[in-house]
Length: 260
Image (tube, rainbow, N blue to C red):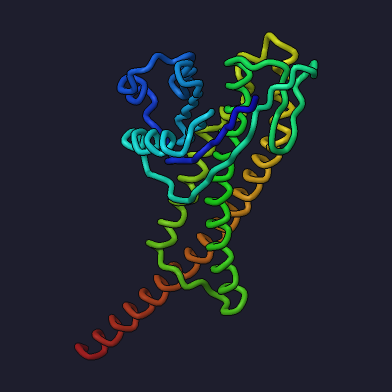
């Protein structure tokens, strides 16, 4: 028996509270930031996270599409990047402990706790995919200005556009900081060595911690570039002000000479 797991980054965030109130299905577990459904009547599983990710278990294409369209009404800023990851849960009665592979995890038996751990990790992986795309865009745009500085000795960006760029960088970083909890181990693994080990192996398989450290490092690079751009712009603005003052002084001297 196999269960197909598929995670999709639908939006930047969801209003979990409003979604739970309107979905009209009893949640198996949940909090202010996530909700898990064990839909036993059709052998489906659903995990929704407030950082804009939906994870499906045993959903066909039509049911998945219908739910995505439904939950979009509870989304803030839809993501149109086709960020999707698939995974499999395979049941093998002959093994004693879960075996984690690149494309599947084999378990002796399946329950909602194991499903939640697997779906949580693939959901985290897709969220990191999204933040990696955002930081790639920021680094690419900063490289453009660095090349200008190297070749021309100046950067062609207005103060307004620079402030917009700074705002975009800070917005991405704040979004990541707000969702730092996605790296925390779920409470359900604290009382079970087997579940804790499964969670660790899944994190290692999806490179969750390594990718986050790389993400943080890349954001530091962007922030350092921002500091440089700001300094260059301040020098340019200061130079303009100095010339403006010089022109005013010359103008005053000319007037005083004319009306002596």
